[in-house]
Length: 274
Image (spheres, rainbow, N blue to C red):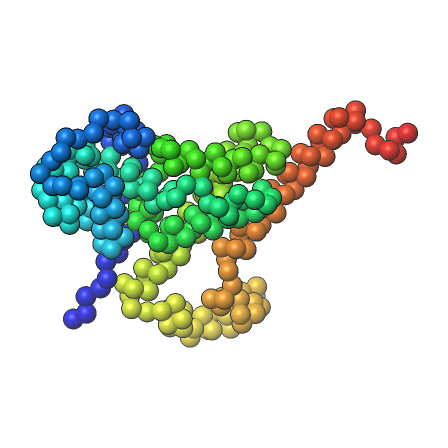
């Protein structure tokens, strides 16, 4: 019997910000008291977080526990508590590390606001693909450490020329993030379905062809029957198409906002009013 690989997205949902907020912020900002030298030389918050991320990537978030992380580091669980209060706080440190690994993405440092949003969206998708357990975490209330703030500061600075209000700028970031998470969920779940069933997408949909051909022959689904043969091919990039249309819509808003501001400066008169 062949064993199946672990599913990083399975089981229960965790929530960010569910631990000791004050202590987690101290760890994120490195402002808290440092633990005295313990029995395990070289143990640090960074090593603990790295080990937890490695376990989550390979086996899923449910496999992450203080005891399991300690075992991987070759120490006792009590040693970890000298550095991190518990799993809830550890999770927030993990989120900060994987979502903002090196601070702002250099790709958002130049070019238009559209280029900045494109780069941010693509990098966020890549992060979710590398760490699919992120989809199991409710991140509606994130804790903001220096990495997160630096990234947000950089991105907002790049898109401020859009001319939107401050709430609208933040809403733009929220909108892009929501789109990315939805797209990542679809991609990761498709891959998990293929692993868990042993069927590729082609094999799965191919098994439905006889039934679908009969359904199309009834004439009850004329629009579906008229679709071209390449409609559902894997070559179409749904993520890029959707991202492009969102940004096209923002282009319209930015243009309208700019025209409105220009009209207000000129008193609402055009050259044809002379």
